[in-house]
Length: 137
Image 1: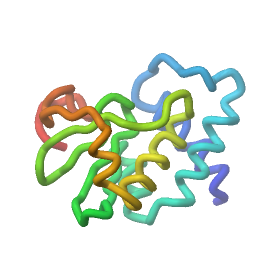
Image 2: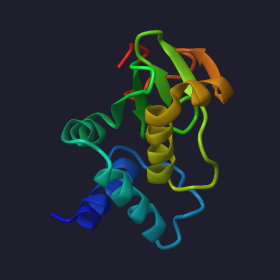
Image 3: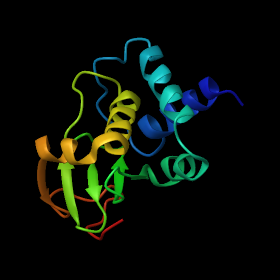
């Protein structure tokens, strides 16, 4: 299956598959959203793809050798430092979610310290967890 077809499925799965959410500014045709998911999909490993599909988040090893978890459910505080149990909020504004996640992923892999220095931070339970529970995912 091509990345574009998978992106179409991923877009539907994350947007409509679990619960209908308010859609963003790129929803008129859906093409920018699908292109963003396709680009993200091409930059993920097999394990990251599996986690994104089934768990709606994936892990990234940052340039500082720490593991970060990126949530595809929300943009607010969607970066979790797994070891320190701290959430961070930083990323590009006004872009589809796939591009948002790809930007965070590449930034963490290239210069995690810089991203974290400008990000807002809070405790890991600052916002409800991505699967609706309060436990660490």
